[in-house]
Length: 190
Length: 142
Image (cartoon, rainbow over all chains, first blue to last red; front, side, top):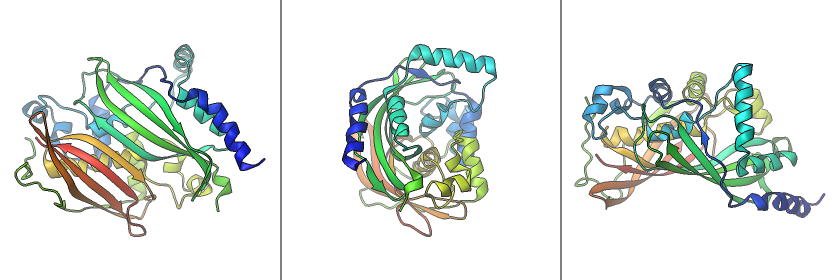
């Protein structure tokens, strides 16, 4: 199979998904204190407005806030669920339908590009958020797929998505992100 | 208490360099990364998996860099500042045993709705490679 044919096959499968916005998916958990502190611990962030209610209340924010840069972390899914909740989550997922970006990842996987690594992440935070704001909703749009390229870790392709984030309590846009993901075949490096 | 900062619109100008931040990465740093960001993709905690997939070793993830870059900004600008943008390219990996140096330089100072926004270029080097992470960030001063 020639490279051009491979590219054409992949592009033909992914082209219909480009520009489409997926359904809003809600984080499994509301924004809470403990995950904020766990995040700060990992990078040793001592900012008191992330740690202390009183410091937060006396700050310009008027309350303890999450580090805005914890956005992606706060939307990470559960590691494990008991079977009855797993079934419930699967039903909810089926009702929502897949996002265009996850369908595109599936196409890349079919062609052997199974290892994923982010290469670019851009986030813009539009307003502070924190405990009491409920869950975080996100919807994404697939905006670009590159041809298959040779990379240091093996042949792969780059998928670019844009993501909108809303808070449950206010229903307002709190952040926007752009993500470039490399999906590659790590068994063909060099 | 809030942390105060000497940084204000009067004394920030293009070209200003921030003090560097040094960070030693150990195996435990990678464990704390998983615990703090809830990212259990094996490339970030399993050396064999990482090496079999073309990497030098298991390496720090996207969210850890977000955390460190945000911390670097508010350490400098104080706890009344607000991180407005963090964007970066990951050009290299940072693995257990590496020594990181974070450096930042002001590239722009502007006003928006009576607030001062400071744009900076921030890089993360290690002992093997310059610019493992190249970031474009914006912080709103308090």
